[in-house]
Image (cartoon, rainbow, N blue to C red; front, side, top):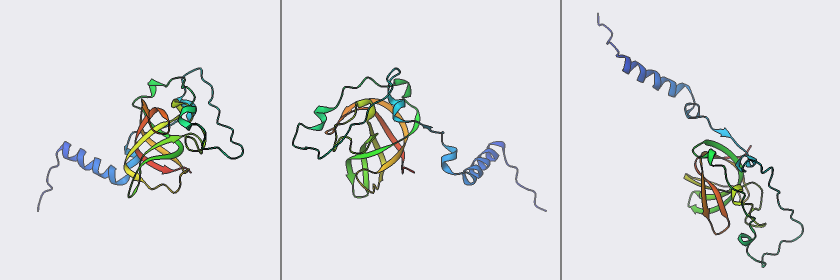
Length: 172
């Protein structure tokens, strides 16, 4: 009669971890993200950012929209390094043959394209290694990833935050 091979504790731990990986979805093993909203990006004491009132036809021959961006009241550095999920609308910056790889995420439809951009603390620059196949210019999405305060300028707007996206999914 053959005896069972002895399994060392470290090998048992490895087998248990492998079993857990198969039994649970991949996201369940990752750090949990925190759902945040656009209000959470505003510094303490700032209550709300008004969305623009759009009426009639927008005159695109006027001054560029970037020059109409309101000043930002600052950012929230305590958010640096947090894994978050934020809903918003995609404004593409870079595309490859498979989808959007860099975009700005904005809180309302048309920001930066048809109406002046919101303040920098209400715009997030998003880079993603896996291109996202957007269904349209104003598609609502969730972006999950690590957020950082990062001032940057794009051709469309100045931004106050950046997320290196681990996941971009349609908004439900």
